[in-house]
Image (cartoon, rainbow, N blue to C red; front, side, top):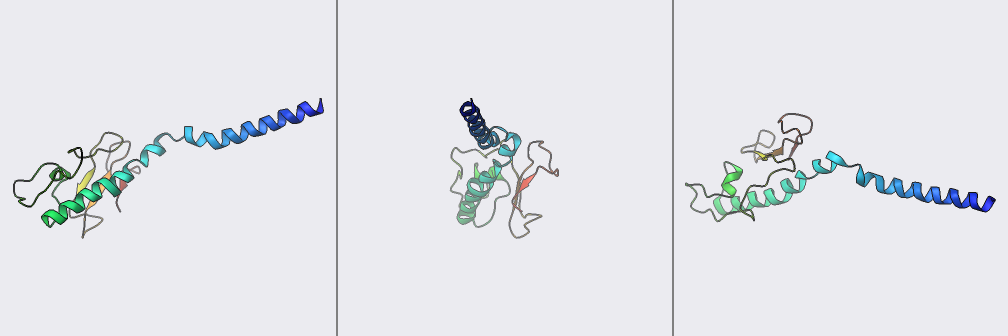
Length: 128
């Protein structure tokens, strides 16, 4: 009898440990999606903007200039995304780009308005 109680306690302890390890993966919700724009901002868009600057000599007026050649840019060698479309954030909104940046005056501002899609709220994600 005592042996079966110890076995039950051991099984419950193992089960509790497994739940504690696995639960965070199932309970991520919007937290996981909020991390989604960061790789886009840091890598794909950052790289495309950098290549545009190397080719043309200055930052683009909009992110769409990375996909479609502006009429006045003769050194443009894009599109700078593959596939040739501007990435959208995980909530289906376009990234907000500004050059020169308000937060980065010598460079550009790039942000996602987050899950609510409204600029200027606490769920915004930017490069500043």
